[in-house]
Length: 114
Length: 114
Image (cartoon, rainbow over all chains, first blue to last red; front, side, top):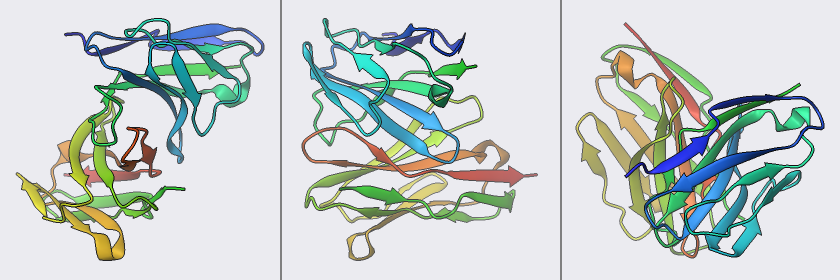
């Protein structure tokens, strides 16, 4: 199993550009989520999904869109990038989405918006 | 709302010293789960331990040990005889019963020097 994969590893965008961060898992996990990590802030939840076709907002959803058309994929879209979105983005998945589940994290995408 | 506080932003020790990383949490749920993750300089998140709210037994794994005290809402992590390879950022996190959404503390950077 590849686990949780994220592409790209690094990305530089100009303000106003759009892009999609890809996340895929091959463990048949129902629950997937996106976090962003900023210096001194820990990781904060952006969006999450409890299954295909179901998504919800986390703590910091503004400026990001998600959809979940398959169990395996959970892309994160930035429609109009802003410097405040410079961050490291982590995708995670867990088996059923219960609080007791261990979450499996991807390697992260480092995004810089200039 | 749930909250995790890691009051120690940065800790520096010399190899072979013992070090304790503090974690204090807040939640209204009676069933919840506490986690510790390690983030080495390479950037990935490494799962260390999960503890549920009904199990206050301390745990030891090699040089690592965890002290869970519900009375003080704390879940502290001790590294015995620290090594340079322990240098990393350590995150404490909390999830509640229903969803595996994690609330992270801001992290403690541990620097172990030779």
